[in-house]
Length: 265
Image (cartoon, rainbow, N blue to C red; front, side, top):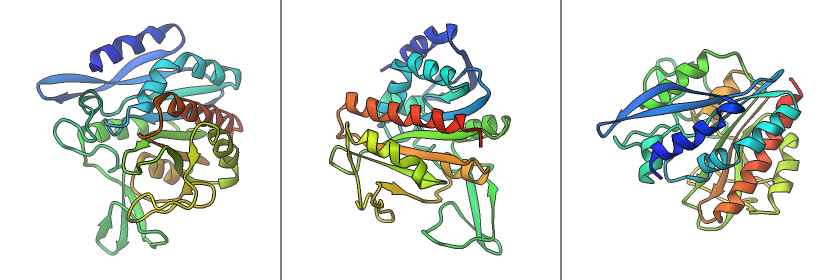
């Protein structure tokens, strides 16, 4: 999809949300706006998606189902702060990284694991001395990080991804916080995609019996953990999952995170 079409379609939601361009990035001689959609509510949920361009389900769920998402949020007095497509050139090209080959997904944080030794990711259980915001990284990450730092801590934060490396129609999530809070979402999502229970998803991470992983990788989810957000997760459906089923899984987690945000913790 040409990203201009994406923007034009998202702009049709101006009657139910404030649609803004919080930044612009230059790629291949073109200017791409970075979108934000905001609604009002007593509590607040941040949703991000589209860090990886070959993972279209999240940006498309937010594009095609935003009205019902906003209605659910309004019914629970939750204000939305939605960044629907962080990597527009990658989304347009269907490539993981942006057109410059930069990797927008991480680079929110760095961890000092020994005096003067900083890492972008921690191995499971690896101790560290302190963490700090990273001031470099891809242009999209820098823009989003600066934008998020302007806002107070939300009640919950959900990042929507897909996994193109596991070649089965599965779903799982990277989470922090009370894992029991996510169990109903896992159960509901299992109607549309098999949950990746006890599955090795990469060289480092293996899901638990709920299909959940805890991993400090410097991502926006990790960033919100460090900002002490009580519910923060990165949802994954594999790209082998039919798109309509991926939409339903995404919506289950979005509605669930609206309800978690409404707890107001």
